Length: 373
Image (cartoon, rainbow, N blue to C red):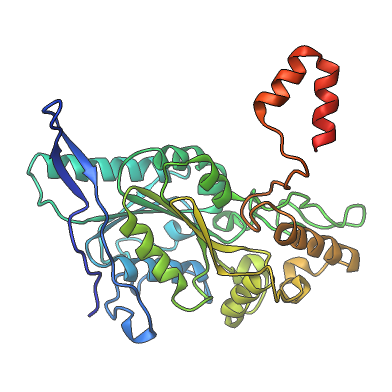
């Protein structure tokens, strides 16, 4: 069995020479990088006994992240597909300790669990060792209802990882639209009709980019897909757990039931979603963005991805063209392609300059701003 190689404990008691006070500091833990399929741990810590749908990519996310983290892991999960499917009466597929929490409480439960472990170690009630704290939540429970809790978790100094598994709907309650449902998709909340062909008119919420920009002390934020590229998700989990402090991964999870396709094509659709660029694949560590699949070049047409799903069967050519245009803009015009949706200014302007102009003459200030934009 291959397990993470830990070089040192994550939390250490350090005495401040100036004040004499003892405080906990976060150190870096090194995990072994998985470089080939042969190095994937054989031990199954998420095993048989769950009730996920055939072809469920979110089940692969659960299986993979606990393989990557190893047996010294505690897991907390909020209400959603992966809660209902993993809690058949008196059974569970989790081999590691696992706790259910409320729909919007993924971030806050991670805080409580990590803080509790820190307190127990500080008081000497358990050994000081690396124990991974991982919280998982769906796109409704994490990207919509639970976003505030995740934000709070990323502002702590606790060692925890939040994984948002995104199947682009509230699949637990029969496929309702969420803030992360793809534009134009049919859901039970957005059925196409004769008067309005497109009912899902919102563009997918950019949760990972939002959290990366809004939490400068968070050292690691990433997007991932369990299907593609091979080993990428496993290694991102290990990297997130190794850097120390709060971290976040947003995974892209094809859903046969909600997306209306044959379960055998889950991996293919995951790969097409990445290759078409509709779901950007990147990681941010200490403020530096790295693309694990660079869709700025050699993108496949997004239509190849959309046409394989029944939820887009009502789209016509102009709809495909609109979605393709939005994807192209994301990669060709954004300040940080696929991550930050700001368009570079032609002439830079500082806040102080804009404020000074507006203070002297409000009308002049507004005109200046328009010219810069």
